[in-house]
Length: 162
Ligand code: COA
Image (cartoon, rainbow, N blue to C red):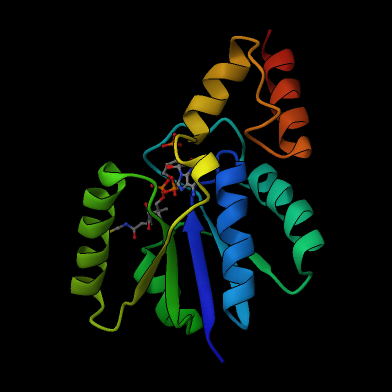
């Protein structure tokens, strides 16, 4: 059985991430989404909130998809839980350089590290969580960029910050 791991910050999950989750769910027998607590980024959503938004969505795709958090090295998470492969999306050439650096560094840390890159739906090529947050903050329309539960959560966040 191939157990795939899809790691990311997901602050918040967007339609682009969801597209990759759906693709991975049809390709692999078992899928886990790992949410990085993230030491470098200032998150809008807490780790609990990010996981809960993802859980609401994955339970409709396949209730067997696991959602976990991590605050260690990705390779440690993989070794401890015996995931077979990591899934990442490649949206543009700019992603490629970053992803190649990460993949090769992860393989340096663990020679058994294996990653598969999936091509997202072209509708989501320009999407990123930061852009979604910026648009929402300035009252722009994000309805085609994120699922409904995320749209509501972002609106509530910005309302509570006013
Ligand atoms: N569709 C839309 N947007 C996407 C996307 C997709 N398919 N894939 C990524 N993105 C966006 C995200 O929204 C995010 O946007 P933002 O920067 O505006 O917030 C950006 O692309 C990158 O996000 P993500 O895919 O979540 O990756 P990340 O760079 O935040 O996370 C980790 C990378 C968490 C996997 C990596 O940092 C990691 O492994 N950390 C653990 C510590 C570690 O092992 N470090 C050593 C690594 S060598």
